[in-house]
Length: 236
Image (cartoon, rainbow, N blue to C red; front, side, top):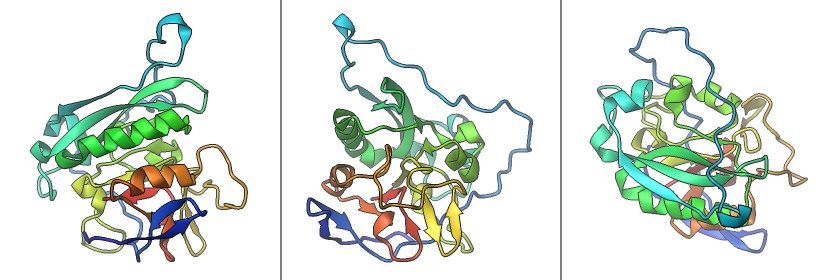
């Protein structure tokens, strides 16, 4: 269910992180679109044009409206937000290959500036992000998106085992590098190959600086929830 969580405590002595009892992992709503055989989405995204002299490209973002057709199976009638209340935000990010790439997230219309600013900070930090694709590329399958280590936002789906809408269904949540930052509940890890050992820092794992970029704008982190713990999940 939607609700505010207080930003509390110091994170690694450097960052205020949000802590609250979080919702369970979300699951995809059954799609009204008949299943069809489609090619697997690419596992990489094209790099933007390099800056003059071959330097690192400047950060860039853009916002555009979306339609039901554009959202594909990630939206259907009955969802809590109409397409008019959502926007596509194109962001630039540093890939695991050490190059700049452009990707796209769909978020609530009122959060576009915050999302662009957060990813600008991650880009300046050279924080590596595997992929940034909208979930329609995976036919709105959360499992498939996580398996690809894809960073995504809007997906009209309820919380697992319940009827309440996930924050993703409002375009108010982002899952960042799911493989490096998995969802953990008891013996369940999603994606199954997610890195559960947090004792050693690995590229793409959420850092204090990443937490700060989100927390400064009022976003809370599922990695601070006691059960389940959702390291990839940020919500507003």
